[in-house]
Length: 116
Image (cartoon, rainbow, N blue to C red; front, side):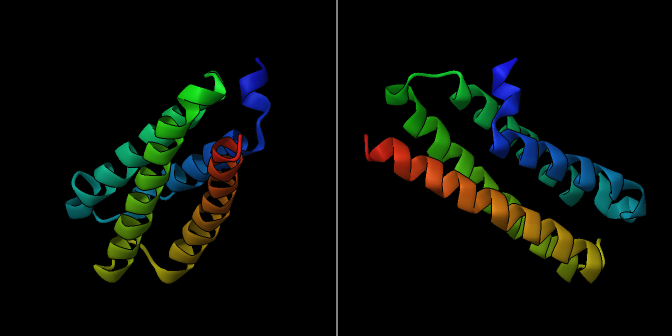
């Protein structure tokens, strides 16, 4: 399927895989609250990106803007996870770098849709 070939989808898919791999190192008290919230937001963002890849240009913008908002929420919750020591700094840096890269890609996609 060609929608799986888009670079931003591959990046967010990879981000989720990394995020998921950290699950067992998260304290149990955080795993079903903050961590679960992060996971849900990340999955919703992945879903929105996949959805947008299958839409017409006219329909894409609101879906992409929602994905961007979700990605920013994810960024905030990951920072919170680091601050409450649910994840260590090394994991935080990895997640933030990947999230920033996806954010730049998403921003470029939104700009290209707006310019049409």
